[in-house]
Image 1 (cartoon, rainbow, N blue to C red):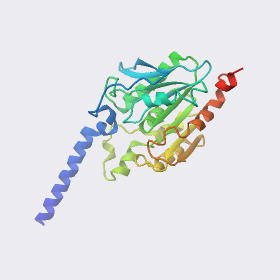
Image 2 (cartoon, rainbow, N blue to C red):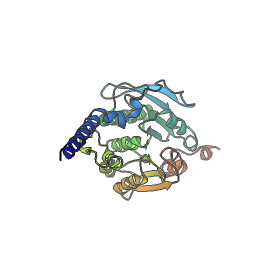
Image 3 (tube, one colour):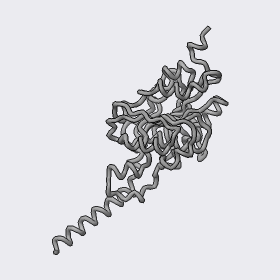
Image 4 (spheres, rainbow, N blue to C red):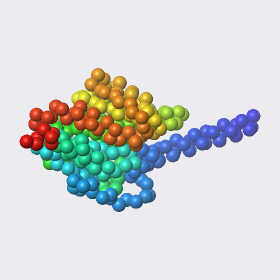
Length: 278
């Protein structure tokens, strides 16, 4: 009996330790790109874009990359994953098929991430997303805004879509909610302790507009079933594309489909390069 009591006490102690660690360090797990001790220097500015600094409503300074659209064309406002940076997205959306069709791009580095001030949180990243859209609107008045996000960035895009006019949502490897991911990875973890929940499943139906979700069938970070759940929550306006690939290799695999899906409605005001050539 004494041995059982000792084992029970040890188990309770380990559980209490886990609760304390979750409470203290959860944001370093959710937003690792803001807490890693690796290189913090900015990456090279992709060709065709310019680096800029934009101010959020709560006075944080964000590193961002901008490429102007052709007159009458749209802007992709892109939000990166939790361990990434904006440069790869800025380069991607400055190349064909996007550049050929006249799109511009604005990609930001979240607060606390390299080049930006502050510390990350759900409310903070949503404020960052709203600041990004406001900057794109300021620089290209009247340009339709396509919201793009990968992984955590998809959750940012969905939250922003609730609050601003937009052309649609292009989401790669998204999850339905943060508690949903935690339950898969740690079935007994107390999700009620999460300070940031990223409930995209509750937000996406209110976001409106067409939705394209692309998910890798071999995604070991965000299982494909979470992307399917989000597509179901989005309703009939959502298109779900499963592709062979993992959490990262999926990026860009459906760009031509996405550009056609979201860009066709802009062709009268924004002809493609080929169509615009005499």
